Image (cartoon, rainbow, N blue to C red; front, side):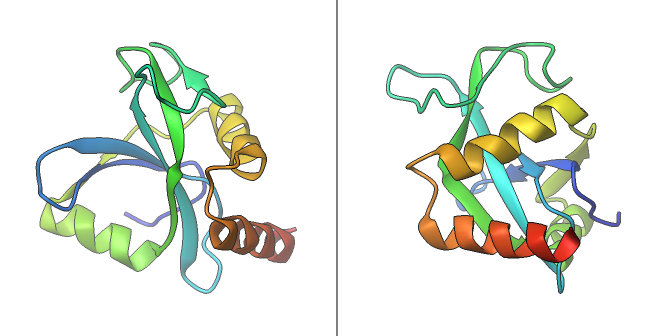
Length: 127
């Protein structure tokens, strides 16, 4: 699997229990990508980007993008996780979902500042 902007993968958490849908929201830039995490909507969830069943084939309940968990990783790391089974590729995000995820990253005050900066750098380089 070659990682591109819009890919989604189901990634296990550090404990190997819960899996979260992650969306790659940048093209690879010197191997780096920015990903955001989709989680089930809860009363204390960030409501910047709310998702419903049908917004992506994997989403089957009210969900949100949790920008606090957004991070910079490498395409190589995601590809290795797919190979070793700790990540599973899912259907690509639609253009609409991708745009909502990207817009929310910069708007959210829960996105780590260094992730926002890296996102801006990658998008600027890709432009």
